[in-house]
Image 1 (cartoon, rainbow, N blue to C red):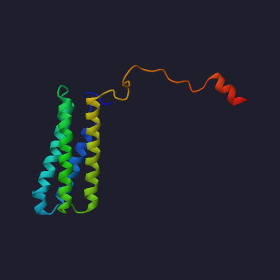
Image 2: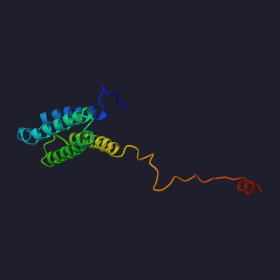
Image 3: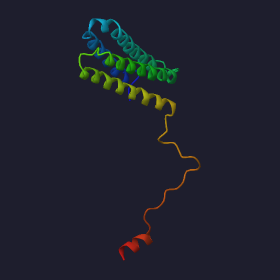
Image 4: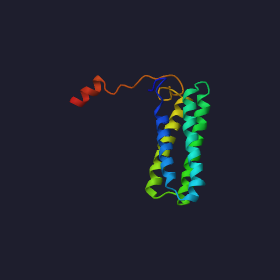
Length: 146
């Protein structure tokens, strides 16, 4: 768990993605650099700023994290379009960015699920709690030894 003063891993992941996208766009051909490259850079920066805002604003955190999930999905779509336009220098370059965006999406989705239902794992099933079954009894043990 992170402290109040140390940002969560999702912010560091978003920051890494911004840097990687900046470096990738520098190597785009000129036309793509100023078209899809500018869109990618802007969307990556939006993801980074929204993640920070969602972390800081506790009162509206659930809403902001939900919006963050959507913005990350939009970034993934932009990455896909850039790949289809062959803006990346190689498929490997696209693959690295796509994996980072996927990891970021998984982190945001987990954060969202945790905010929506914080104790799902510990929740009781519908109805009253039942007593566990005994897996071994004296009679079963006696039958096994005879």
